[in-house]
Structure formats: structure tokens, C-alpha cells
Image (cartoon, rainbow, N blue to C red; front, side, top):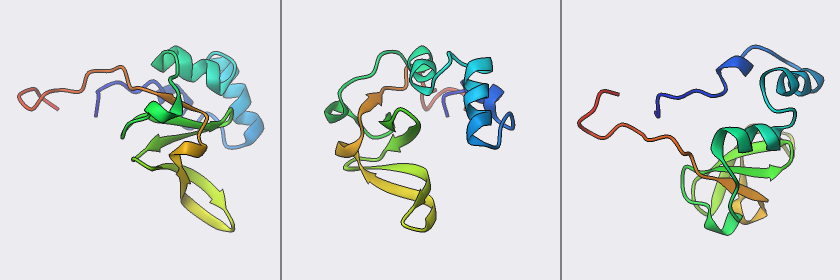
Length: 107
């Protein structure tokens, strides 16, 4: 949507929890929080999260704010897939700093 894919190097680079940590050290800034901050800038309080913002539930999980709830991919109570979490339960929010094309520009 924005034409920028900061996570491209990570895709296909790991398939385990340990592999994800190694990928963060290799392609990122060492941790998910440091890598996210390097890509998106400083976080803001989760009460300021808006639709489309990236939210952090803990230091190991990122999701997308859709309003009162945020969407994560994972497992919860035996359910695999999209997990809805109250946005207020998240710990940080990050605004996407990239400009999306306007209606008159190529997409």
C-alpha cells in the first residue's frame, strides 16, 4: 500500500522462534522493539493508536490497530489465525511514517 516493504529480508528467513531471533540480529536491530523503532520511529502511547497503526502487545508480538481492537496472527485458546485483542491491552503504538500515494498517483 505504501510502496515500502521493510520486512522483505525477513520473509522466508526463519520458521522457528529461535530462527526469528537470529533473523532480527541478522536483518534488524537485534530485537523486535529495536527493529520496529528503527523502521517506524519512536512509539506513542497506545491510547493514541489509530486505525492502521502498528501496535505491540508485548516485546514479541506486533499487530494492526483497527479501532477498539487490534488484529494479531497467532494462537489463542486453541484458535489459530487472526486473534482480536483489545487495543487498550497493547503496550505501544507506532504510526506508519511512509506516505501512501494519493488518488491521482500510480498505486
